[in-house]
Image (cartoon, rainbow over all chains, first blue to last red; front, side):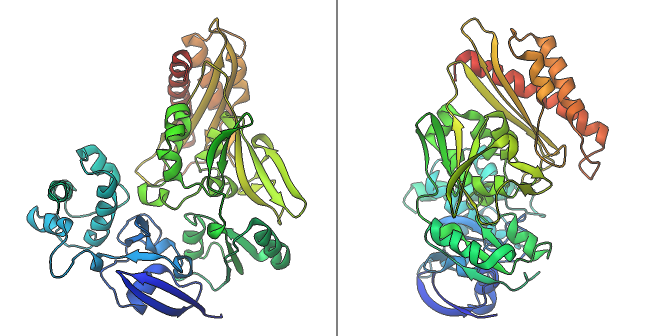
Amino acid sequence: MAHQKISLKVNGMDHELMVEPRLLLVHCLRDVLRLTGTHIGCETSHCGACTVHLDGKAIKSCSLFAVQAHGREVTTVEGLEQDGTLHPIQEGFWQEHGLQCGFCTPGMMMAATAFLKDHPQPTEDEIRVAISGNLCRCTGYMNIVKSIQYAAAKLRQGG
Amino acid sequence: MIPPSFEYYAPTTVEEAIGLLQQLGPEAKILSGGMSLIPLMRLRLAAPSYLIDINRIAGLAEIKETDGFLRIGALTREAELEHSDLVRSKYPILMETAAVIGDPLVRNRATVGGNLAHADPANDHPATMLALAAEVVATGPKGQRSIPMTSFFTGFFATALDPDEILTEIRIPLPPLHSGGAYVKLERKVGDFATAGVAAQLTLDRGGVCEQVRIGLTNVDQTPIQARQAEEVMRGKRIEPDMVRRAAQLAAEASDPNADLRGSVEYKRDLVRVLTIRALNRALERARRGT
């Protein structure tokens, strides 16, 4: 099948790629751009391990073709840390023990950061709804919620 | 889980998209939010030869009240519907529907038009749109035509859309004063399809008599269905609690669900009864409050 030329901005870097239309964004990120922080879990849009930002909105990259992202901006978990400084959400997961095996963590952090942009002072319930499309099989979610609360507080103080 | 190969088109106008549908024929499929289609392709349950991605067409994602209708562009994302101030203040039934579709991340992509055009009897918008007496606008080579919701779903995953038509808008007649609606769904977990869902919309007159009532049911038949006999119990009468119970019983009897992991036939029918009571009571309360 004919490849198509697409341009993507990923974590601030421009890329021009030749891709098959059936290449999913998550495979494009992992296998073509070697950004393996974005994980593949269920592959059917249930688990949220593959969550990234597309033009600032959290989406599941297993359910979008890379060609659909042509001309658009993608942020992955690798784009959170800036100049060697952890993003408040990363610091939150570290301080509050928000992960055990870590498989869901990149998706959780991407869902959380998109959510916190619009909800600087979230309630616990709002946080739980915001991550309801992201499954964690280790933590029971308690510490993930605390990690997001930590990040919200830190972001309110200006990061 | 790699989807089968296909050719990809991304038209920027409705006309261009219709031209592609005509040119490519029945092996072409419209890609909207993709939240059903892409997983189906990954599971190889769908293998279209051509995908026509309508996401780059401008002007198909507006929510507005004009000319006696609430108009919802087909490309409106569920998240936009859920968080729209207009919808939240005046159409809580639509907000409740959008808020239980998929999960928050899925709702950033999933579209209202796709939820209807996919015609999955387990999807949530069909029941609500039946209750709201909505119509859809189908745009094809000969222009636009309107299809009432009651004749839109023609079978299992089948609609009245012609192969060269695209669903471009949903139109809901503006509800009269003293109208209210509600959507109640039971799901095993966030992101699951409904075990059953019930949408109810009703209008009272000044004396509190039920002028109009419609009830739509999710995932209890081969298509989304309207519980017409249940409605008849209440239409033209002052609604009393025993009438609600009788209507709920008839809605349960109108259901023809399949037994699956979500429950037995008997369980699902009884669930329809319980959810109908809840949906009607909430709709009544809203109609009495005037929203």
